[in-house]
Length: 358
Ligand SMILES: NC(=O)N[C@@H](CC(=O)O)C(=O)O
Ligand SMILES: [Zn+2]
Ligand SMILES: [Zn+2]
Image (tube, rainbow, N blue to C red):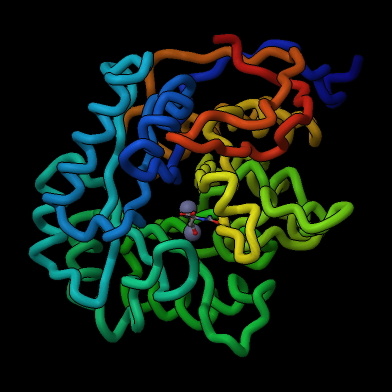
């Protein structure tokens, strides 16, 4: 066989233990229900701060961190192994001092921008980034604290499918011009526009990609009827975007890494007249990502995406142990317990070609 022929895809794949760089764990009973799913396969996760009320101070982040570890200890999870990496929710009132405290804490690893009104629990979000948050951003740039961005404009005149692309010109470019050394992660990108922007931008910019945006296009939301469990924000886009995202994720570029955006909502809150946005993937994220990488013959680039690029960008050590993926079918459960209700995972009832050897 000539050397240039693609290698036959393997049936087992051992990789450095991955991390999840974008995760919603919620709080209380919901937290207890889901934290074990992430801790089973991932070493660390960046914990989103969009609780009610949001996590806006280092003190609140410390308390939330401790609740996560307590919830983990109360499940069968291994407390010593999983590390929650905390974030602060940026508001119009976040001070440079608060950024200093966050940096000094050692447990807060990033600050999250939610444009006000863009997504779940974003009411307290930022109304005017450069106008209101310049002092906080300057301090973040100075101390090397990454800004994580939900990149959608909220202008009602902009079509919901165009909100990410318009965000690049209206917010991302002015932000990066004003703070060129600020580390920025364009979270859960969903368009070719965002993938191209991140690939070509100068300076410390990266992006996370979810399994749903690599595997599905917007047809999934309407397949045979309205499918609320495929509804998340930013919303799934057309097939050309999915292909561009999958190409970026599997390219080997260091700028793209794993962030599930696993976002649990009780079944009843998704299956109602006004359903919540968010897909639950913590349980089977690695099986979903392996399926996506395998589809384009790029399993050999999964380890960089899942386990290397994230810690390298954040300036953290890579994990030292491993997990093993096997080409054995995995049946996604129809539902999972969630406090006194239930949770429907993404692709519930379907069979995936890959699973994690537990
Ligand atoms: N992705 C989602 O659709 N929902 C997230 C919020 C977010 O990440 O935008 C949630 O908290 O439910
Ligand atoms: Zn978001
Ligand atoms: Zn999210």
